[in-house]
Length: 261
Ligand code: IPE
Ligand code: IPE
Ligand code: MG
Figure 1 (tube, protein in one colour):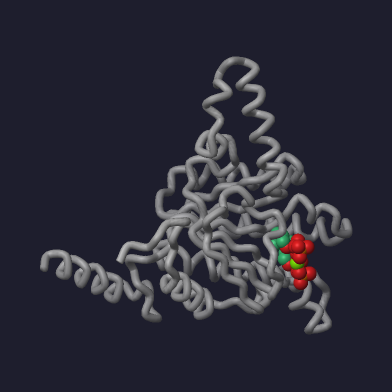
Figure 2 (cartoon, helix red, strand yellow):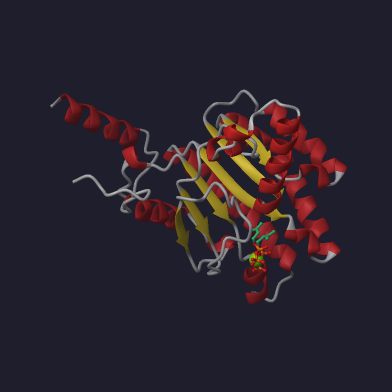
């Protein structure tokens, strides 16, 4: 009885705050959602626009999704914004993406503060242009004490190099006798990744219809639920994001075990 009462109270609270709707179960909100934001170029091409216009429009979707994730009570949102392989794109596109990233970091600072969002970055961020790392470091520091949601941007990120980096650090610590060979377990390796201290993603979403992972959080997504949508990133809206979370809530996660009746 007490249990039912408690549950009812919680959902009423959500209703009052009109934070989430669409029949979402507030008790089954994924803790960590990762998103492979793909399809900006094709969105622009369809409209006979420059690819950069697609990236600009994609930045709007980032704003929508961050806000919506925060409203839903998602604790960790990780956005794949630029891969290690994306450096191979034409210089003009890379430069435009860097400029856009810088603008985003400057423009979003207030929104992050107002919504108690802590910014985090993973990847080879030292490869970013200096003016970008400067605003990034500033935003990281500015939001460091926020406790509402962790927004992680994967920038110059690659899963394979992350794992290789972890292996190299483990080898170094083993040589220095900081760790014993017998201590090298999956749990230990996780601690050497950029994502240490974060739970693994419960759900990974990829837009644009491509059904691949493209080097995103390779280690961490071992048991993540995956959702592919044909929607191009700039076209993803709050309603579809909610529908994806709703789909996730209907899934049964087994982690290799037999489900309890
Ligand atoms: C995703 O959109 C953004 C980045 C990878 C930086 P794309 O630029 O990959 O768009 P498509 O896949 O060419 O449509
Ligand atoms: C994945 O998209 C990387 C990001 C979304 C940042 P890509 O467009 O780079 O991936 P591929 O080339 O289709 O695999
Ligand atoms: Mg792409």
